Amino acid sequence: MESDELVVQPGSAEPIYRQIAQQLRRLIASGRLSCGDELPSVRDVAGRHAINPMTVSRAYGQLELEGLLERRRGKGMVVAMARGRAQTTQRRLQQLQPLLEELARQARELELPADSVIENLRALWETDP
Amino acid sequence: MNAVSVAEPDDSSAFPVSCRNLHKHFGIRKVLSDVSLSIPSGAVLGLVGSNGAGKSTLIRILVGLLMPDFGMATVLGEPALQLTDAVKMRLGYVPQQPQALNWMSVGNMLEFVGKFYPSWDREYMGNALMRWNIAPSHRLEKLSPGERQRVALIRALAIRPEVLILDEPASALDPVARRDLLREIALRAGESGMTVLFSTHIVSDLERVASHVCFLHEGRLLLDTTLDDLKETHVRLTLPREAAATFRERIPGEIARRRRPDGGLTLVLARNADADWPQAPIAAGGVLDTPNLEDLFIELTDQPGAAWFTK
Image (cartoon, rainbow over all chains, first blue to last red; front, side, top):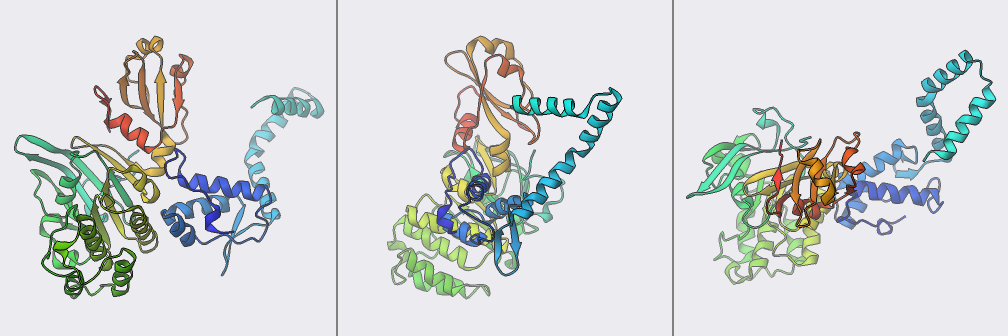
C-alpha cells in the first residue's frame, strides 16, 4: 500500500496514531490488505503527511501487539498471517482464564449443569452492549 | 499528569531545554509568572498562546537573550545566560523577525555563518534555497519579512542543531513552505532525536508534528502534556441551567469552568487514561464531548470569567 492511502486529520479530537491504527485495522479486516502485504515505512508515512514519525511508530507498534502486523527483516512491517491473529485470541482468552475457573468452581458448588450455565452466559453475551 | 515536567526540580541537566520558576516584568506589566518547563530529548513541543501571552519573552529567556527577574533556564545542561560556544554550536534559534547581518547577500551570509559550524549541511542549504525560491544573490535587507524568516530557518536547520527553538516560524510562510518546514522538523526529531520548541498561534501546525503541547496564557502555563494524552484524557462537559446549581463546587478532574450566558456551565475535565468520567453530572443532564485542540485552547483561554485549576 502507499502512504497516500492513509487519511490523516490533524484537527480531529482523535489522536493521529489512533486514526492510522483504525484505518489499518479496517483495511485488514476488509481484506484490502492481506497477509504478507508490505506497509509503507514509518519515514514514508511521516514525510508524506508531515507528521511525527513517532506517531506512525506508535500506530504500527500497537497493531503489532494486536498481532495484525509483524516486523519482517529487510521488509519492514507486513500484514501478519491469520495464524498470528489466532494466537492473540488465545492469549486474550488466557486473560479470562482465572474468571472462567472461578465460574466453573462456583457452578459446581451450586450443582448446576454446565449446559445451563453456558446458555445463561450466551444470553448475557447477546443482550449486554 | 504532567508528562513534560517529570523531572526532579534540580534535575535540569537531564533535559535539553528546561526552566524553573521563571518570572518576568516589563515595567509594571507582569509577562511571565512562575513558568517551569522541561523538554525531553527528541520531543517536539508546541507552545500555544494568543498574541501577548508571553511566548516570545519565554523563548528569549530560554535562549539566553533576556534575563528573568527570577528563576533560571538551561540549554543542554548550561545556564541560558552563560552558554559556551560549544553549546551554541548545537543550538538553532530563529526569532520572529530576524535582523542579523542584513547588509550581506543571502549566499554570502550563509557561507560566512557556515564556516563557524563543523556540522554545516551545504546540501540541505542549497536544496532549501531552491525549494523556498530564494535567490542567493539578493541582499537580506531587500527581502520581505517572510523571505528573511525563511533564510533564518535555513540557517538554523543547516547547522544540524540538537536543539531547535523557533518563535512563530509558520507565520510568514506560505502553505507549501510551511508543510516543508513541518516535515523537516518532524523527521529530524523522530529520526535524529533533535529537540524542538516552537511557538505558534496556529493550532493546526502543531497538531501535525508536536509530541508535546503547552498552553501559555497571560504569562502562566495552563497545561503541559503530550498531545496524544491531551486528546485522550480531556473532555468538555456541558451542563444545562437546571443542573448548574447542583454543581457549584469543583467536581473530580475539573480543570476549568465558565458560566454560559444561558446560566448553564461548561467545564473541561481531565482524567487518567483508564479512569471513568464522573457519572453524577451526566445523570443530571450534562453532555460530554471531545474537544479538538483548538476548542480546548479556546475553552481554557478565551473565556471571560473562566476559572482554572492548575497543578
